[in-house]
Image (cartoon, rainbow, N blue to C red; front, side, top):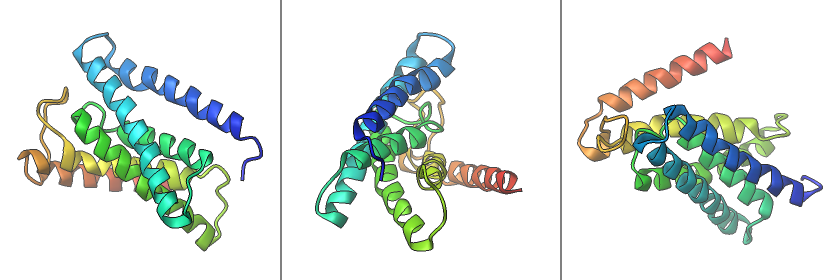
Length: 175
């Protein structure tokens, strides 16, 4: 466990603020796209925090500030690939799902005994895969990217494309 929780919260807060520049700044202008991406980034991070806190509460009977910081980061990681493709409601769902699943993924580290002192696998790998795949479900043509996923009548093709892309990136990274 980290020995200085205030610094953990400070670091997570700085990441949250910086992530706005990363995600919304990718629009290269201060227009509609940047505004949607900014909002999606904010709500996904908050939902990730709440999802992780809920999972801790259910598993351990309490929530922690460390878990809140980790949930925040998992929401940010998961929304990054999806921030221009989903509505704010979709961003909330993606963030919450990431918070829940990434919290469970961290438990695997302890059960399997692999060395991951910063929870990079459980938060970044799992969160990134979740965010990338959920585009296939939550993408909406009303978002800046203009494509629809399964839940918005776009069919299964986008999910297939996202799955192939995820597998390709995982294979390339592994090699």
